[in-house]
Image 1: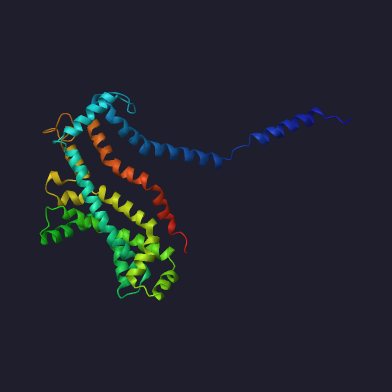
Image 2: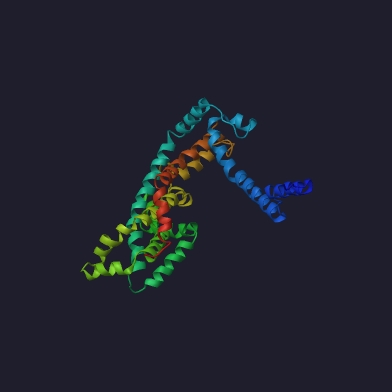
Length: 312
């Protein structure tokens, strides 16, 4: 009967231990440490501020200053914070949100009516000046929005529209990024043979677009609508320049009024009850519509982003 020597038995135990506990290479350790550092930086600069702004309305201002930075206060403090925000300038927060909704959705409708046919025409039809128009669309899309505010203001002033809601709605409706998204979608996903077959059957260009191309564009329509909604809702500089009255301000410009009324930013004429909790709650309220749109349209957005990845 064969026997196993103690030396061989101990060697087998050492081999098994080596297999169970592999030695980490210096490169692996350095990679893990770098990953932990990046994750910690992400939590510090992104997650912690979001948690703070979510918890701040539930606390009093003195508790925020003296207490733990990330702690839940009470529902009583949350209710008091809401009352202060709601009562500011005779319920101005509701007026600002209503104005934002009017500007954003009106401009969104105009954007879809103009951007989708324009992108289709640039991608699927041949006409004179097609390439210069496409180049101009790309150039305007890459320009910062703030550079166009002054010429837009002078143009709308010449048309006699200064001070009206159209000084915001019409520039909001000008959305070259939506034209480019539609162009890339049609160029990458819709086969020209399909449209050509409809033309051979006797359909004119409008009928081809309405009956064939438009039903296929649902993913990109959702994508253009979402990006336009977010861009318009969060736009600050254009309404700030164009609108003369606080009653016409959208939510983002209205927040600047709230900040300027706080003793934290205006010690001379600040409103004593507009402090850190009220500012945080107002910021959260103006962010809720964008969050709701994103959550309800998430599936359509994913479909729109991946639709142009393959041809056919």
